[in-house]
Length: 227
Image (cartoon, rainbow, N blue to C red):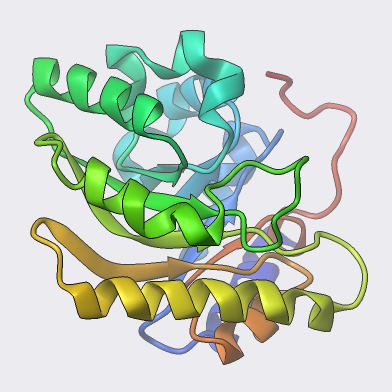
């Protein structure tokens, strides 16, 4: 099932669009099956789960952190975490960026990051508010061991996919504004938007990276690895 799902999704994506397989609560065997089907990037929400899967999968794919750093700060700000991940998609504060920068300096690494935008201004969601994004990006751009590579945002997980369009449009607008400023050491390359129920809308609004879980792996199973 996973192989067929991946092949179908890849056939729908334009060549310039990156697929991130969101592997929340999925085991290493499922992740390997997705990789063998053509997935090149694995997205993980939880540090513990990611480390267990990484022990089995290793560097057969790139690893993106797509969870909430603030809620996992103890495990997130560790050398082992920074060594494992190839990109962090969910940076929304200078404090977290500074922590990543400090650890990456110690291990001799420059971490690619995306700035998470709370485009819907929802208090229950993480992300910097749209009106504060430029100021945050200017501050983070001064750090030496992180490199801003673009933006990401969340849309509503359920409901009509069209409900996500204003979120995506707002984030694309910020993306283009930052690109015009042409800040040193900031490369607006990736616009990560869209999940299983909304990635087609996200593509129409300019996304070139999508995060898809359920449509690849199916619904959660009782034997999934817990973090």
